[in-house]
Amino acid sequence: MKRQQGFTLIELMIVVAIVGVLAGIAWPSYQEHVRSANRADAQGALMGLAQAMEQHFTQNGTYANSHTGKVPDIFPDEAPLDGGNKTYDLRIEEADGDSYILQAIPKNGQAGDGTVQLSSSGERGWDRDSDGFDASDMCWSKSCS
Picture 1 (tube, rainbow, N blue to C red):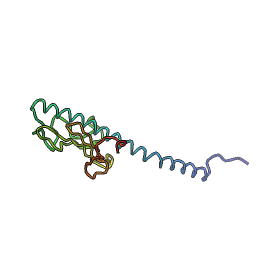
Picture 2: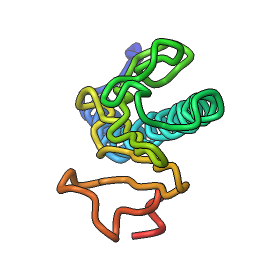
Picture 3: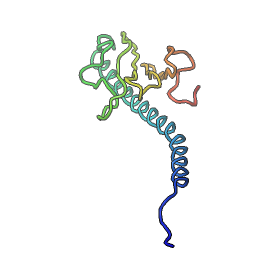
Picture 4: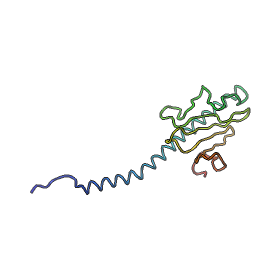
């Protein structure tokens, strides 16, 4: 009698179950990594926009009239700056004579873990739960909460 070679249905089901368990563990970790990378891109873009604001202040002696609500034409209004999937909109939340507040607002579900903020005084904020900025949100990392 010749012996047949191949997989039994039980062996195949065991492999499918193992792959399913591994995917169930890996997928949430991957999604968190993507959100974290998108947030880091937004933070970098806010730092670049802050440099543009400082340049505006150097030339004009004020932050006022620097396109409040809208990013100046000399700077991109989406992050990441270097192309790819744009996951955050950049905006100037407030700009008066001697201060400003910049924000990066998530565009879609992939970015989705809250607004990132930077002020002229260097104060950084991350509104993780989109309930408005409060004292617990004044940090850019999870370790600050």
